[in-house]
Image (cartoon, rainbow, N blue to C red; front, top):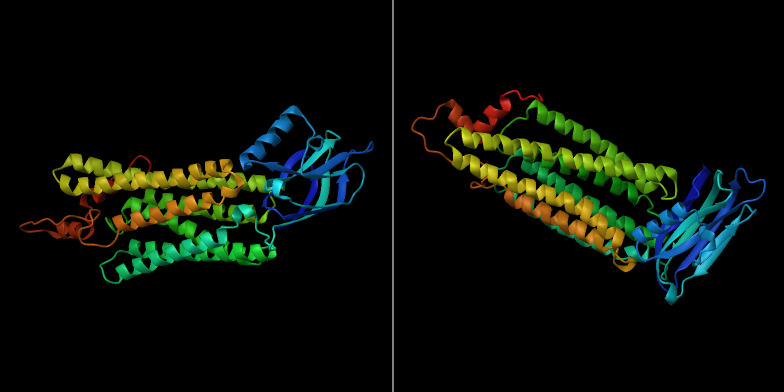
Length: 418
């Protein structure tokens, strides 16, 4: 990893700059220049410390305890520290031994003066034998993402092979586009980590990944929204409330994608990184909540339709599938946003790559089950069951095509939120 950081007039006394997993023979090279501390007429004591921790959550907890107890990190044992008491340039190198392997965090600490503004420029180079500039925690990621890309490509080919042999709806083509974007995102992510492993920087591949990841993210939320509303499969239109929900989610996704780029390209040690991290998490949660509303509305409408007339066979079949889809979406969101986050915070350093494995495994499972349930076929329970009628009128013919007479009647009635 090649890490550059420029800090201007920062009032924080203690914060993490970067983390890296080292194995035996790994090297640390830290250089600091243009170090300035305001209000330092009587001198100052600042430094940079490499601290080992069992997990990322343990490292963060230690920093919080030091801040609460107003203790100086420079007084504690560490792998190495670069301490300044008046100089403006610092440099330190270290080779990791077998007993020193583990997850390390480069931390800035200002012990005195208590209140001051600090400025500096830092250049850090971390690498393991090879040389490999990729953290040992992430060493498996290039291969993992390449395997995932192959699986997504297989799903894409299978899906389009199904589309060309069956009668399909517009939503089926959108699901295929989602698989294409996801496959390309995985390919670019694999290449990105491969290049970082060799050079220490993304060399442009990160921007290719951001582009496809953004397109994938927007398409995923739109597809879930449209399936939840029954568009194309059950009804040929969207009501005003559903259109408004989609517009809001797309706007949130634009903010989310901007936050993703800034978050990935900004150093963890900068103040802006913390702000955009919080924005990214908040917007992602809002999007996840918003996509559930159309599914809930459809379940409510179908429940009312099933109770209002005798067409229970059609409506109960649709209602059952909507409920299943709701559970699938909630489970997917809960696992990828909460469970994976907890795993990343608690796993030991040599198993941190498992968070990506679990996340992608859950995504592949979600895509596969959704595709199986909503694949184009004549007897799909999401579509209308055929009814034999003596003399179908024009409305009945329209119902047979879209299978949503009850849903159409209900959604056309103005609701309090319209």
